[in-house]
Image (tube, rainbow, N blue to C red; front, side):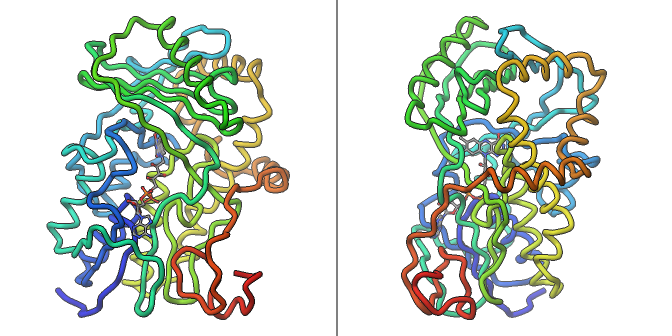
Length: 385
Ligand SMILES: Cc1cc2nc3c(=O)[nH]c(=O)nc-3n(C[C@H](O)[C@H](O)[C@H](O)COP(=O)(O)OP(=O)(O)OC[C@H]3O[C@@H](n4cnc5c(N)ncnc54)[C@H](O)[C@@H]3O)c2cc1C
């Protein structure tokens, strides 16, 4: 089936690939522009978690519903191999009725999410233009999924080989990960260890060093072939979804990111799917996002405010509470979805939180650039753009 219409997609990340796969399945010609010469070059073979607690439906069913095949490493992480260590250094095991998350690999490795999505797109005939950095759009309709543009939170970590058995540990302590967490993910002889921070970025080396000391004092783990990696995530209080009627923003570029923990992959894929569906079915992209993604984003900003104000004693309390639950999934789901109290807290959090994104790059008066988010009709002066 061909609808003889060509759509441009900018950025071969999970968001861009999901949009490309969705459109290609509906018979559109898709040109996917990627500035690098491969998918996943933003990452270094590190493991990430595809969260599985925020929806009633299992994340793999959700991906299936989007038409995404699981042709990449996607390892369920269950309670028997999952621990948390809080500021009091006590090892806490939690109970879950289903995998808390699915471990995926990011980067250029054959089994990575990025390469799996790449293969699916290629099989559907998506025309991927590698080494094509797109800065402006002269004509046509485009979906822009170029990822984060500023660092609201950063991660510093290592990937390594190990003989340790499969295990996942989350560490929460402001002394090693200010207002965030550190994590160890081990899968079949390979491991990722990183610490994340939402503030005090300039001391990232110190936090990483302390986090590594804590890891080594918590478990006996050998490390071979150690490679460093790092990265950042970006989220806005209010996502920016489109510029005029020609450009749709998706994923982190639109500001879709879990403000509490940085679990942005599901947001990216869902927003990519919605943008594609809005073109295929002539539906309102904003309407689709507002139904599912906005309430979650709002809740995550409220949660970020709460988490930032708990401090170490609060984190100890949180772990004691989680350890006492027969199943943490319903509780996490409740806290990851909107409620009356979260709406109130969101109002406070919105005033408190300011994204670090300052849109400095665009100097055009009548602009077609994919970077700035102001439509032609919305601005006439350099100041507004
Ligand atoms: C260290 C780290 C750990 C993380 N851990 C998790 C986790 O455990 N779970 C989770 O859900 N999320 C995690 N995230 C977040 C997750 O990786 C992102 O939210 C997700 O990749 C966003 O997808 P995206 O498609 O919006 O953008 P990206 O994945 O950033 O892809 C954007 C693509 O666009 C390309 N591009 C950029 N500009 C241009 C241009 N002008 N022209 C052409 N191409 C361009 C880039 O090269 C890139 O390939 C983590 C992020 C980091 C940094």
